[in-house]
Length: 231
Image 1 (tube, helix red, strand yellow):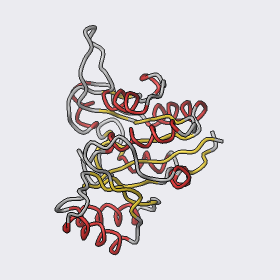
Image 2 (cartoon, rainbow, N blue to C red):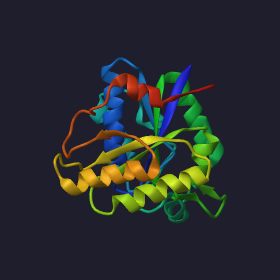
Image 3 (cartoon, helix red, strand yellow):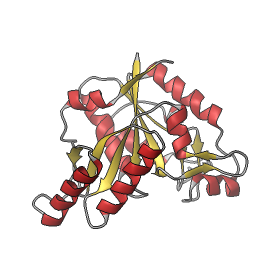
Image 4 (cartoon, rainbow, N blue to C red):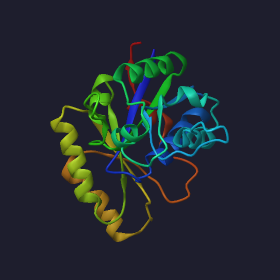
Protein backbone atom coordinates (compact mmCIF):
# COMPACT_ATOMS: atom_id res chain seq x y z
CA UNK A 1 0.00 0.00 0.00
CA UNK A 2 1.34 3.44 -0.92
CA UNK A 3 1.66 6.43 1.42
CA UNK A 4 1.49 10.17 0.85
CA UNK A 5 2.35 13.46 2.55
CA UNK A 6 1.42 17.05 1.72
CA UNK A 7 3.99 19.85 1.74
CA UNK A 8 2.64 23.34 2.38
CA UNK A 9 4.34 26.59 3.28
CA UNK A 10 3.70 29.75 5.24
CA UNK A 11 3.63 31.55 1.87
CA UNK A 12 5.21 31.54 -1.54
CA UNK A 13 8.99 31.31 -1.96
CA UNK A 14 9.48 29.55 1.37
CA UNK A 15 11.39 26.74 -0.34
CA UNK A 16 8.67 24.09 -0.65
CA UNK A 17 10.07 22.76 -3.92
CA UNK A 18 13.64 22.81 -2.62
CA UNK A 19 12.66 20.90 0.52
CA UNK A 20 10.46 18.54 -1.49
CA UNK A 21 13.49 17.74 -3.65
CA UNK A 22 15.59 16.96 -0.57
CA UNK A 23 12.80 14.79 0.87
CA UNK A 24 12.42 12.78 -2.33
CA UNK A 25 16.20 12.47 -2.62
CA UNK A 26 16.45 11.08 0.91
CA UNK A 27 13.74 8.54 0.21
CA UNK A 28 15.29 7.53 -3.10
CA UNK A 29 18.74 7.07 -1.59
CA UNK A 30 17.19 4.77 1.01
CA UNK A 31 15.43 2.68 -1.61
CA UNK A 32 11.90 3.78 -0.76
CA UNK A 33 10.56 4.16 -4.35
CA UNK A 34 9.41 7.79 -3.98
CA UNK A 35 7.37 9.94 -6.35
CA UNK A 36 6.35 13.58 -6.55
CA UNK A 37 3.05 15.27 -7.40
CA UNK A 38 1.76 18.84 -7.59
CA UNK A 39 -1.74 19.75 -8.72
CA UNK A 40 -0.85 23.06 -10.36
CA UNK A 41 2.39 24.88 -11.16
CA UNK A 42 2.67 28.52 -12.18
CA UNK A 43 5.56 30.58 -13.51
CA UNK A 44 6.96 28.05 -15.98
CA UNK A 45 9.12 28.52 -19.07
CA UNK A 46 8.38 27.19 -22.54
CA UNK A 47 10.33 24.76 -24.67
CA UNK A 48 11.22 25.65 -28.25
CA UNK A 49 8.09 23.86 -29.43
CA UNK A 50 5.96 26.08 -27.20
CA UNK A 51 5.10 23.47 -24.59
CA UNK A 52 5.47 24.40 -20.95
CA UNK A 53 8.17 22.90 -18.73
CA UNK A 54 6.89 22.01 -15.25
CA UNK A 55 9.80 23.69 -13.50
CA UNK A 56 9.15 22.52 -9.94
CA UNK A 57 8.80 18.93 -11.08
CA UNK A 58 11.98 19.20 -13.12
CA UNK A 59 13.88 20.57 -10.12
CA UNK A 60 12.67 17.77 -7.85
CA UNK A 61 13.59 15.14 -10.43
CA UNK A 62 17.07 16.59 -10.94
CA UNK A 63 17.66 17.07 -7.22
CA UNK A 64 16.49 13.61 -6.22
CA UNK A 65 17.70 11.59 -9.20
CA UNK A 66 14.36 9.84 -9.68
CA UNK A 67 13.23 8.93 -13.19
CA UNK A 68 9.53 9.75 -12.83
CA UNK A 69 8.21 11.25 -16.11
CA UNK A 70 7.46 14.96 -15.85
CA UNK A 71 3.98 14.50 -17.32
CA UNK A 72 3.06 12.29 -14.34
CA UNK A 73 4.13 14.91 -11.82
CA UNK A 74 1.69 17.75 -12.52
CA UNK A 75 -1.56 17.88 -14.51
CA UNK A 76 -1.81 21.69 -14.67
CA UNK A 77 1.13 23.84 -15.79
CA UNK A 78 0.89 27.61 -16.37
CA UNK A 79 3.25 30.23 -17.74
CA UNK A 80 2.26 33.25 -15.67
CA UNK A 81 3.71 33.40 -12.17
CA UNK A 82 0.31 33.97 -10.59
CA UNK A 83 -2.00 31.99 -8.37
CA UNK A 84 -3.39 29.09 -10.45
CA UNK A 85 -6.89 30.56 -10.42
CA UNK A 86 -5.64 33.74 -12.12
CA UNK A 87 -3.13 32.02 -14.38
CA UNK A 88 -5.85 29.74 -15.72
CA UNK A 89 -8.21 32.69 -16.18
CA UNK A 90 -5.62 34.22 -18.53
CA UNK A 91 -4.33 31.04 -20.16
CA UNK A 92 -7.28 28.67 -20.04
CA UNK A 93 -7.24 25.07 -18.78
CA UNK A 94 -8.71 25.63 -15.29
CA UNK A 95 -8.04 23.06 -12.61
CA UNK A 96 -10.62 20.30 -12.21
CA UNK A 97 -10.68 18.23 -9.05
CA UNK A 98 -11.36 14.92 -10.81
CA UNK A 99 -8.27 15.41 -13.01
CA UNK A 100 -6.16 16.15 -9.93
CA UNK A 101 -7.47 13.01 -8.23
CA UNK A 102 -6.85 10.84 -11.29
CA UNK A 103 -3.23 11.97 -11.51
CA UNK A 104 -2.74 11.49 -7.79
CA UNK A 105 -4.16 7.97 -7.83
CA UNK A 106 -2.09 7.05 -10.87
CA UNK A 107 1.05 8.15 -9.05
CA UNK A 108 0.04 6.19 -5.94
CA UNK A 109 -0.11 3.04 -8.07
CA UNK A 110 3.54 3.46 -9.09
CA UNK A 111 5.28 4.94 -6.06
CA UNK A 112 5.44 3.83 -2.44
CA UNK A 113 5.98 7.30 -0.94
CA UNK A 114 4.30 10.16 -2.76
CA UNK A 115 5.30 13.71 -1.82
CA UNK A 116 2.54 16.15 -2.78
CA UNK A 117 3.55 19.80 -2.94
CA UNK A 118 1.09 22.66 -2.66
CA UNK A 119 0.93 25.90 -4.62
CA UNK A 120 1.84 28.95 -2.52
CA UNK A 121 0.45 28.94 1.01
CA UNK A 122 -2.48 26.92 2.30
CA UNK A 123 -4.99 29.68 1.37
CA UNK A 124 -3.97 29.69 -2.29
CA UNK A 125 -7.01 29.69 -4.63
CA UNK A 126 -6.57 26.96 -7.24
CA UNK A 127 -9.71 27.62 -9.31
CA UNK A 128 -12.34 30.31 -8.89
CA UNK A 129 -14.42 31.04 -11.97
CA UNK A 130 -15.47 27.60 -13.23
CA UNK A 131 -15.35 25.89 -9.84
CA UNK A 132 -14.41 27.06 -6.37
CA UNK A 133 -11.29 25.09 -5.38
CA UNK A 134 -8.95 26.20 -2.62
CA UNK A 135 -5.69 24.40 -1.89
CA UNK A 136 -7.20 23.10 1.33
CA UNK A 137 -9.94 21.41 -0.73
CA UNK A 138 -7.29 19.37 -2.52
CA UNK A 139 -5.65 18.41 0.79
CA UNK A 140 -9.00 17.21 2.13
CA UNK A 141 -10.11 15.50 -1.08
CA UNK A 142 -6.87 13.51 -1.21
CA UNK A 143 -7.00 12.82 2.57
CA UNK A 144 -3.48 14.09 3.20
CA UNK A 145 -1.61 14.97 6.36
CA UNK A 146 0.78 17.89 6.05
CA UNK A 147 4.04 19.43 7.10
CA UNK A 148 4.75 23.16 7.01
CA UNK A 149 7.82 24.71 5.38
CA UNK A 150 8.79 28.03 6.94
CA UNK A 151 11.60 30.56 6.79
CA UNK A 152 13.72 30.55 9.95
CA UNK A 153 14.10 34.33 9.87
CA UNK A 154 12.24 37.43 10.99
CA UNK A 155 8.45 37.27 10.83
CA UNK A 156 8.17 33.52 10.88
CA UNK A 157 6.46 33.25 14.28
CA UNK A 158 3.37 35.06 13.04
CA UNK A 159 3.17 33.20 9.72
CA UNK A 160 3.81 29.75 11.22
CA UNK A 161 1.27 30.14 14.01
CA UNK A 162 -1.40 31.55 11.71
CA UNK A 163 -0.85 28.76 9.17
CA UNK A 164 -0.93 26.03 11.81
CA UNK A 165 -4.02 27.41 13.55
CA UNK A 166 -5.90 27.92 10.28
CA UNK A 167 -5.17 24.35 9.22
CA UNK A 168 -6.31 22.99 12.56
CA UNK A 169 -9.49 25.07 12.39
CA UNK A 170 -10.15 23.54 8.97
CA UNK A 171 -9.55 20.02 10.34
CA UNK A 172 -6.26 19.39 8.52
CA UNK A 173 -3.61 17.30 10.26
CA UNK A 174 -0.18 18.92 10.60
CA UNK A 175 2.76 16.69 11.54
CA UNK A 176 5.49 19.29 12.07
CA UNK A 177 7.61 22.10 10.67
CA UNK A 178 10.78 22.27 8.55
CA UNK A 179 12.64 25.57 8.84
CA UNK A 180 14.47 26.72 5.71
CA UNK A 181 17.24 29.37 5.35
CA UNK A 182 18.53 28.37 8.79
CA UNK A 183 21.80 29.79 10.16
CA UNK A 184 23.23 27.74 13.08
CA UNK A 185 23.88 29.83 16.16
CA UNK A 186 21.70 32.76 15.05
CA UNK A 187 20.02 33.82 18.29
CA UNK A 188 16.92 35.23 16.59
CA UNK A 189 16.34 32.14 14.46
CA UNK A 190 16.84 29.82 17.42
CA UNK A 191 14.29 31.81 19.40
CA UNK A 192 11.91 31.87 16.42
CA UNK A 193 12.01 28.10 16.26
CA UNK A 194 11.47 27.76 20.01
CA UNK A 195 8.51 30.14 19.95
CA UNK A 196 6.94 28.40 16.96
CA UNK A 197 7.20 25.06 18.74
CA UNK A 198 5.80 26.54 21.96
CA UNK A 199 2.89 28.37 20.32
CA UNK A 200 1.83 25.60 17.95
CA UNK A 201 2.82 22.46 19.85
CA UNK A 202 4.37 21.16 16.62
CA UNK A 203 7.83 19.59 16.46
CA UNK A 204 10.67 20.90 14.35
CA UNK A 205 11.42 18.11 11.89
CA UNK A 206 14.55 19.63 10.34
CA UNK A 207 16.55 22.85 10.02
CA UNK A 208 17.85 23.38 6.49
CA UNK A 209 20.75 25.68 5.71
CA UNK A 210 21.08 27.48 2.38
CA UNK A 211 22.77 25.28 -0.20
CA UNK A 212 22.11 22.05 1.71
CA UNK A 213 22.18 18.94 -0.45
CA UNK A 214 20.93 16.53 2.20
CA UNK A 215 17.99 16.57 4.59
CA UNK A 216 19.14 15.97 8.15
CA UNK A 217 16.35 13.69 9.30
CA UNK A 218 16.31 9.98 10.04
CA UNK A 219 14.64 8.08 7.21
CA UNK A 220 12.39 6.18 9.63
CA UNK A 221 11.17 9.47 11.08
CA UNK A 222 10.63 10.78 7.55
CA UNK A 223 8.66 7.79 6.32
CA UNK A 224 6.65 7.87 9.55
CA UNK A 225 5.22 11.22 8.46
CA UNK A 226 3.57 9.63 5.43
CA UNK A 227 0.18 8.00 5.83
CA UNK A 228 -1.10 5.00 3.91
CA UNK A 229 -3.61 5.65 1.18
CA UNK A 230 -5.93 3.17 -0.47
CA UNK A 231 -6.15 3.54 -4.24
